[in-house]
Amino acid sequence: MKTHAPKPSASIALALALALAVAGTGTTQAQACLDKRQIQEAVSSGQIKSLDAVLAGAGVDPNAEILNVQVCDQGGRLVYVIGVLSQDGQAQNLTLSAQ
Image 1 (spheres, rainbow, N blue to C red):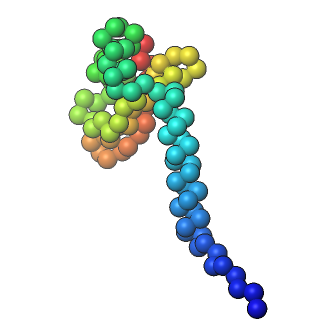
Image 2: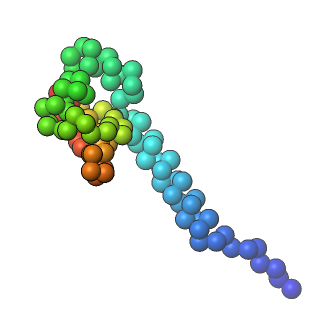
Image 3: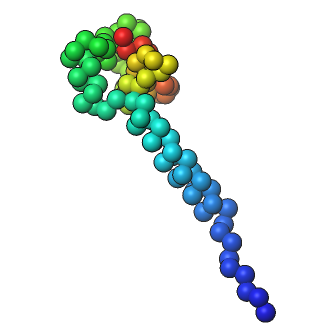
């Protein structure tokens, strides 16, 4: 009599697929985005504007909560990718020119 190994449940397969997708995305972002030190150096050297200057220039509410910030190369130009939570609870990602 043959015994069959139990098949992984759909939730385990889905969790594995999501983990692999996230791992792949992180690698791509790490190659295309600056780390914190590089961002500080780029601001200090004048290569990019400060986050405060970019947010003010875009008219972002100064009371909005900044959730995360990245500076990434987008088609040969540097942009800020900013997660913002407004006072009314709306979360959004902004992509603003860093130069």
